[in-house]
Image 1 (cartoon, rainbow, N blue to C red):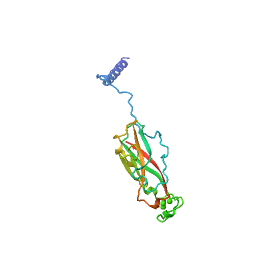
Image 2: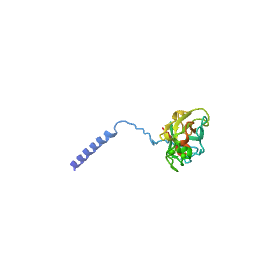
Image 3: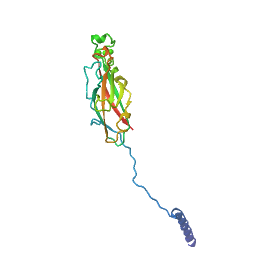
Length: 207
Ligand SMILES: [Ca+2]
Ligand SMILES: [Ca+2]
Ligand SMILES: [Ca+2]
């Protein structure tokens, strides 16, 4: 019986030593609770639409060489609003889904145009001569800050116009109004007579 008691005592002492090794020193722990991380948003609204679903609301017909000279044709005002939570610093515009229709060739046109299919999607020449620019002005007639984009057919890659924003960036809630402008060179000839072109324009905003 005595041997058993001694054995128990030894065991208890050993356990106490182990426990003291963990909690013996003074200590303090402060915790910052409920931390979270989340990403902000970049989101543009055009003319009150998000997503922007309207077609470019202006159709020009009966164009002729020299139209838009010197006062550029106004394809419309586009109000770009930052409805995201982060500032947007980089803006680009590009044209896509470009179709150049020949619509057949009238007599004077056929003398200089060798591709004259009836509908002729891809055989028309208008998009090669229609110049597009973006005006950061009240309208396309006003002389002011603008970004020349190039001929319609050539702006299938994004053109950066960030440097023309009225501020260095578009803050959340802020709106920038831009105008799409067009003109047809005086120098173009009969090859574009009776031709037509359609396209989509898209604005991109990023960090
Ligand atoms: Ca034609
Ligand atoms: Ca042609
Ligand atoms: Ca033509």
